[in-house]
Length: 406
Image (cartoon, rainbow, N blue to C red; front, side, top):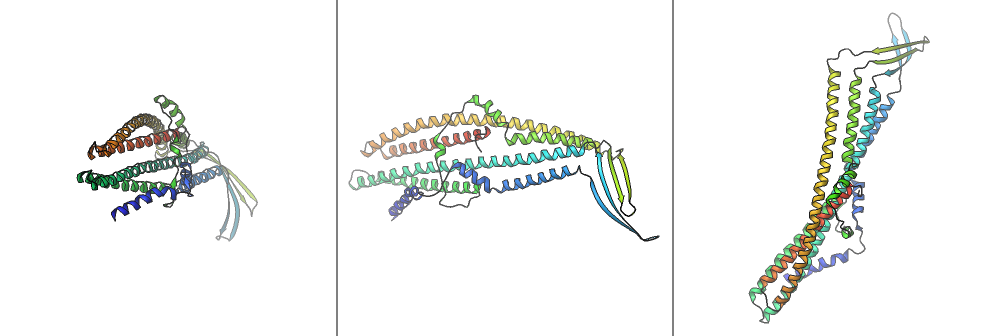
């Protein structure tokens, strides 16, 4: 009964590619595009950007004069109703309105760049999750093939044992190895399911067992050299991570000018037109700040410090970006050469396994030697696959830094 259940399980696993026929196949670009369209953080940043734009429009309207209508009713000593229209406009305020508009314009640009930064970070997360799924698919494929061959050997060993050509202990060792590889197969399938769920969560897509992805991503593995760092770094200077810090310096510069404008006098013009008496009153007001308990001076000092902090933040991001690119290039080079070495090991392990298998089937080597050769082949296959996808992930990140990805 257990054997029948095992065969049914294998049949379902081998039939799964056929079941995919006619189903939608998601490429990496499709996953990223869907995720960007349905991500709540991106929608939230879009609304924030709209609010920043509204504040910018409001600041531009500050240049227009204010117009108010008033109606005064006096009761004593005699009842009198006095309607009037008043208009007031600031002629000079130490350039505070001008610099405030510039600051808000920069704030709007920062919100746009931050929205782009969120999109880039989501693209990176989806790319990593996508590669994790591809890695899981290949590891499951290796586990399937390994389990298929061990099952074949178990059947052969059972026949040899029943015909008296093999020992019972040899049969038990093979059955034990089959049980271990069945556990490995189930675990690899579970990891694949978990990674698929993680990918759909990032995309904000309801999970379905009919969700399948394409493996076209792994067709090309370009070589990255240490000399590419400077080129990648120059391209990466246009990333939102850097641009938002650059805009932050500009905005703090305007804020510093706004604070300094508090020292300047304010000149305004006021006009009141009495509708009942047909009288115009025009006045010019000059307000000179003399003493406000050090508030203006403190604001100027703090704005200057904030400007310096924004410069330091920009320098820090430049340093972090350069170090990150160095780290990723070094990892990419390491994973590439590790993958090449893993391929050599895989080829050697496959040759050794085929030799041991042939000898084992004619009784020239023990089951332990055969199982050891199988384990070496399985480990070599897994290492080759893992180093490949680690390298591909670093390549995708470096592509993003160069503006060659979303």
